[in-house]
Structures are given as C-alpha cells and as structure tokens.
Image 1 (cartoon, helix red, strand yellow):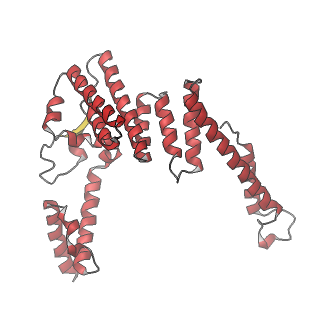
Image 2 (image 1 turned 135 degrees about the horizontal axis):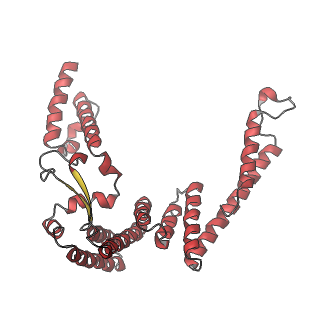
Length: 302
C-alpha cells in the first residue's frame, strides 16, 4: 500500500502541476478513503511548496498584491509605459470614478477603482510573462516591485499624494464593508507615506475599536493613534471626541479591574493551600499584588 500511495502521490503531484484548481471540486477529494487522503496530502504538499515561493509577495499589502493582476490587462499594461504626467492624469481620472462609486454606496466597486488608480505608479509584475500559464505561479524570484516617483521632486510629491489619497479612501471603503483588518493595513501604508496624517491615524483607531472582538490592547493602540492625531491637530473636534470617549471607557474598566483584584484579596480567594497558615504571603498572592500595583500606577493619559 505504501508503494502504491507513493505512485499516486507522484501522479497527483504531476496533475497539480498541470492544473491545481479542479481537484478541490472532485467528489473523491472529500470523504474518508485512501484516495481522498492521498489527494489531500498531495494538495497540502503542493500548497506548502507554492507558499515557499511567495513569502515576499505575501508580506505586501493586499492592494499591492492585486497590482500583479492589473498588469495582465492590456490597457493597464500600456498605460504603465506612458510618460509620468500622463500616468498621473489617468490615475486621477480612475480615482475620481472611485469617488463617484463611493458616494453611491458601491464600496466594493470603489475599492477596485482606488486600487487601479495607484497601480500605474506603484505596482509589482512578473518578469516571466507566462507565469499564469506555465504553472510557475506567483514566484518571488521573478517579481519586481516598481515605485515610479517620476524624475523630479514635484513628480515625486504627486505620486505620494496620489498613493496617500488612495490608501485613505481604501481604508474608508473597508470600514464601510466591515473589513477592519484591511482598513488597518491601508492606514498603515498611508502612515508610511505621511506619519502625521490625521485621517489615517483616526481611521486606524476607528478600525481597531469597531469590531465586537476588539480587546483592551486594541483600545490602547487606538488611544495612542488618537493622541498623536490630537497632537497634530489640537482643534480637531472629531478626534478629540473619540479620544475622550475611549479614555473614559478605559478609566471605567481599570477601576473595575482594580476593584476586582482588591476584592479577591479581601475575600482571601487567592492563597497557596500549602502555606495557608504561614506568616508570609504566598507567591501567587505576591504576583497578584504586583498586578494590582501596576494597574493603579497607570495614568489615564497613557
């Protein structure tokens, strides 16, 4: 059986090289049978191999990854070869189309436009033109990241302005679509371009605290972003309002936490049974007291 399985694996590996997609829809793929198990093993091996080839690609923001596929379209391929000023003109037109879609509430379609708007001046492509047909797939070894900021300082500013605007708009769309992790990624890139951008700081803070699963750590990060935004624009009432709200919520929570720890000590719920009659507090009690001190020592402005 092992030898037979080995032959099957080789055959299936060859099949995956030829066309990896249909296997997932084959009825024999599911179920508890030997052939199904072999198929699953082959797919896992192939996926692991492909994952090793695209480690750099996977680290890029989702909208930069998508530029690889934009380059497969004839119009974008041609536009990328145009002089810088012409590319910026086309990019601004596409971005405006995105703005119109956003205003209509077509946020998913707007996302496509904002991604396409920046793809003429910041994108990746494969030096293997047949990567989609020759089974090479996405391979770091043949990927090139292009950062076209023109030939003058003024053109570089235009490129940064365009990319920043697209990132901010992407973040706004992703928030509307409740894809908060992607909104945060878009804000991260915006802040790489402009570290003091108030919109990016505010939208990232919002994206951190809106999900129902957001944690106290997410709230702390949001407060940190808002504090920086408030420092940049002290008179921004929108920033100030959310910052005040989050700090108030955190203060209430810390008061509850402090009372919880204090109550645990007063009730004598934390103790080491082996040292029940000892004069010195046990190690677990020391640890809890240290935590209590740390809570009490944190400022509401932190």
